[in-house]
Length: 168
Image (tube, rainbow, N blue to C red; front, side, top):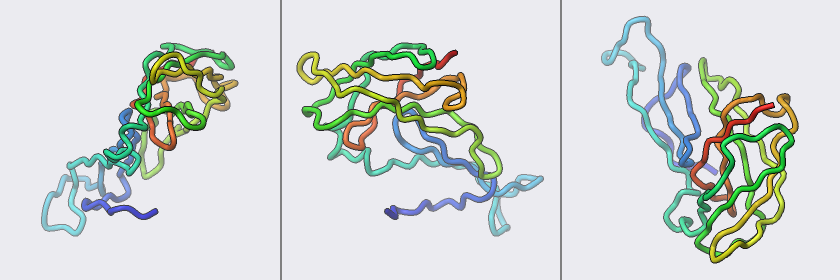
């Protein structure tokens, strides 16, 4: 789907990074060996933007899960549990995804990855609260040891991420 385009030219040395709250941070521009802010077609750009995808629209707020509990550290192949709360009753499977915190240069994001974890259907704990059993990535070929943003995703709407360290 095509959404509203940005208004700031983002050229070769630009980046788009997923933020823990689900927005996308946009920054960077065309490089100049000397900063040039005017009188050029594409001046050096220091403004940053935060794009809010449609899944963050106010009419979907009642679908947005909140991660209540998650381990700080998980090991490869480990089965672990997270606890989430959701305003509306859960319909279907709540996904649990791990997203890396990559760095970008030359319009290429080094180490960017999103790992969809194997999960069991959510189990109601009490009103609006659910427990989900997840399996961590099998090894470093799938996800190198590092810190990852863990998102719970309910009907396409992500939670605010919690940071989890993946170790061997």
